[in-house]
Amino acid sequence: MALALALSVIATTGTGIVLTALATIVYYPGRVFTRPRDAVLLGVLPLAAAGFLGWVFVKSLQAAPPAQVWSLVGVVGLLLMLAARFVLRSSFFGTQRESDQSQAEADAEPG
Figure 1: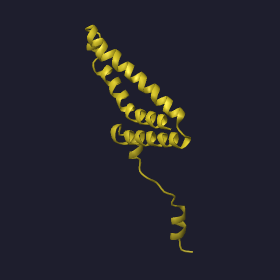
Figure 2: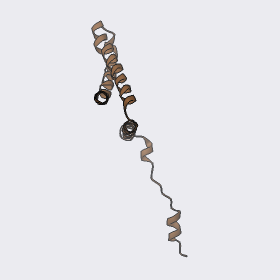
Figure 3: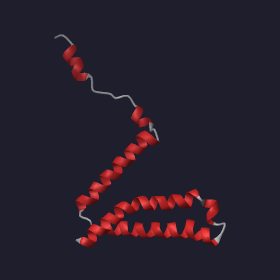
């Protein structure tokens, strides 16, 4: 139980660290290959950290009960929806809302 809790805490905080580590590699592509020290600090270590924390995340999902996994899927889905709405400004969210008018028209007709 304690191991599963520790793994889930590491996995939760680790996902942000994984994204930060991968962003470091993407942000400094020119510096990664300039010197051996930069290759280790900006390339190898962030990649190794991302790999390790990704492994911990997978292990914690394998040990998690199904309800916890589905709640994670729901949170990820919500975050993706918010990103599509506010960051990507998807045209889907600008579509005018429609409703069925057949019942309203039937009620409005005299008869």
